[in-house]
Image: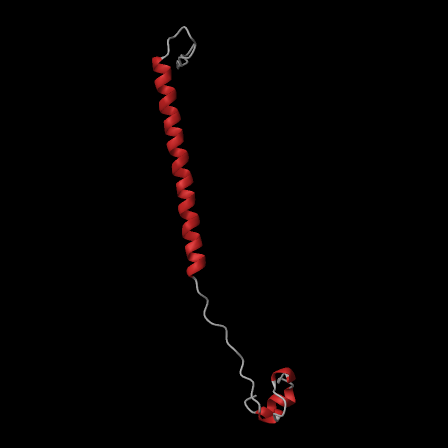
Length: 94
């Protein structure tokens, strides 16, 4: 449909786009092609989400290490009679 008459016969010319007083047989409708998608936003979002996940995991590891160090220090420094000491006993065979 390269000619205006072919478009008219097929009914592909929308009447609301043709200005008043224009012969519809001389109008050719050119369809707009969508522009290429910009991937900057989705890629940046994925990188920020990955970085945030790594930050959360690193924070949890730091807190776990601090808690373990504190528990070990308290277990070593606490007197045995108070009940704060932690002792690990290996089970020996019968």
